[in-house]
Amino acid sequence: MPYPPFFDLVPRLRLRDPLAEFLGAFDGGLVEYGYLDAVTLAGHSCPTVASAYWLTRQALMALYGDAVPERGAVKASFREGRSEGVTGVIANVVTMLTGSTTDSGFKGLAGRFDRRNLMAFDVSQPLDLRFTRVDTGRTVDAEAHLRHVPADHRMAPLMQRCLSGVASPDEAQEFRALWQARVRSVLLDHGDDPAVFVIRPAE
Image (cartoon, rainbow, N blue to C red):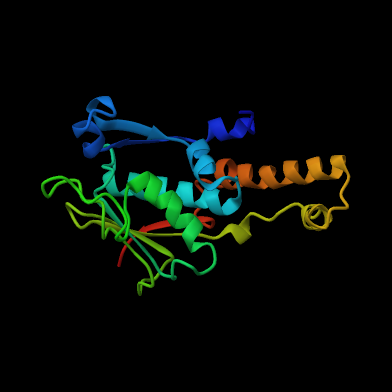
């Protein structure tokens, strides 16, 4: 499955999943996710998928510090409704990484490992996303400002030509390259840029 090489350059996220450990899926419950996993889940690579992966990773790192984050032990809430804008796309990535769901997740075993009611939408909060550790109550707010990573000026007209079916094979390939170049820039050039990715303790 060929894909852009920069996918493998994006830092991965290592988690411990007690349910996976209990059921013998991974030794010690340790599991790793990378940007490729988010792309595979979404079916495409775009700035939204990239920001969903990176915000979640960075928020978990902020919540747990040097400790390994625990999957299934973090609440995630969204300021917008699940069907508004790209909220649903982001929520799918957040669910993959954190295990958090609304009422459709794993129901648990004998009162343990319940993944339901850990995700909420239409919540009054200052930023787009909020992550909260269930065990300590520690909370961080998160938001991405992708407008600070501008697209190449050639990309929009090339996209329109592709969508209208008149682009040549070379133009289509150029569009794809420019599109992924912006995704690469979001993750690798601006991953630590506070103007693009905001992660801060909740007030």
